[in-house]
Length: 267
Image (cartoon, rainbow, N blue to C red; front, top):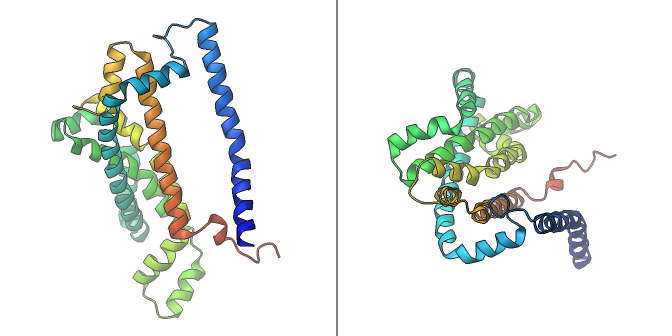
């Protein structure tokens, strides 16, 4: 029974992924044919085969740049998760803090990175620490917002039951409300993870010593379009890996998404 259940799950997963794989293969085939048949200059747009070749040839220098961006993005993301959840709890627990800080937090997210990066260059120079702070600042907003919304959406009876059983309000918050709101909080974490490495790369592009942003800048200055696509491909891949890790952590901590469904809902 257990093996058949696992096999059924794998088949369902494969069925969901097949359309995605087919769409990607068709897109790459059309892209390759358009560039080759249309004789599009490689300085304008590179074909998938040229991008793959450029990635392999430049990997000895591309990988060290990727490691720098990975470090900045990963550390900044972890800080964003911790700070975002704590800020969200603070905004939920204190109406004064919500009224005072939430508008400021929202305003901070509307400012373009190009207007803030020079300040961080003045404060931190070209060091990695400045990029980590930028990533954390831009990554915590969706996590904080979803934490507040998730806590506000928790039905009151959860608190009533816990308090009736003798639990304190603090215990109820940390062990009951946050657990119920965890799915929505993870929604904010996924949104943040989606653009963490893009933010780190942009921050590097505006001022750094090394990283994928500097790689992109060098490729642009030399009109080597395949290398621009190579760096873009790497950003997509590491972002996808981070998203998978986020989903895995959610499954390990909270179980499958359907585990929270009410078994009596359809009755």
